[in-house]
Image 1 (cartoon, rainbow, N blue to C red):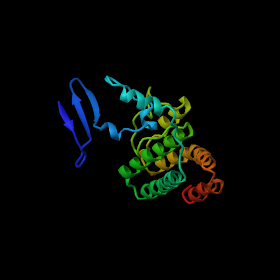
Image 2: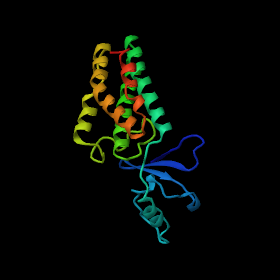
Image 3: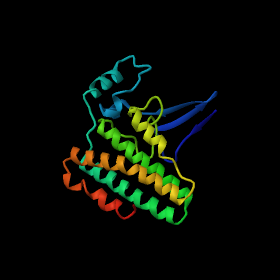
Image 4: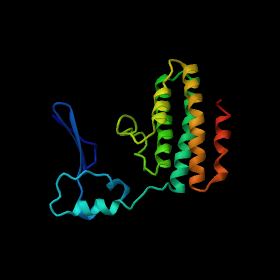
Length: 195
């Protein structure tokens, strides 16, 4: 039916077909394909020479471990989103608040992925986080579902208060995972300004 492309993107196209089928197409040269965590779960439709199968088999040995740099980026976004959702709620910037709450939900879900040794998608990409393909536990999916956007500032502030226990727990877990115990209480410093 149509193709969806991004400017400057030469190795990626999304093809949309009838009746509501979408195919993400990535174009690679064999020399560019390397074993990685992203290649572990690929489904191979056609590989007569077995080159993709070999890459997939070698990828089985790879597992995701968050780096210190990735942790500090994640932590910075988590803290900034809590502060920004508060600011915007106080200014009655409802659409902005909704976007920020969804971002906070994603950041917490990404933390859960990391705890499971799964590399999260790029920031804001919800693919496979919810629904039947999700690797998250039922209680985690229920939390995501229950963190609903409010109809006003007080409702939205109540939503972020509900997110705090999960955010604290996953933050602590990731601090310990990358051997940064000194960062554990930083979240309390950040949250005490808005709660």
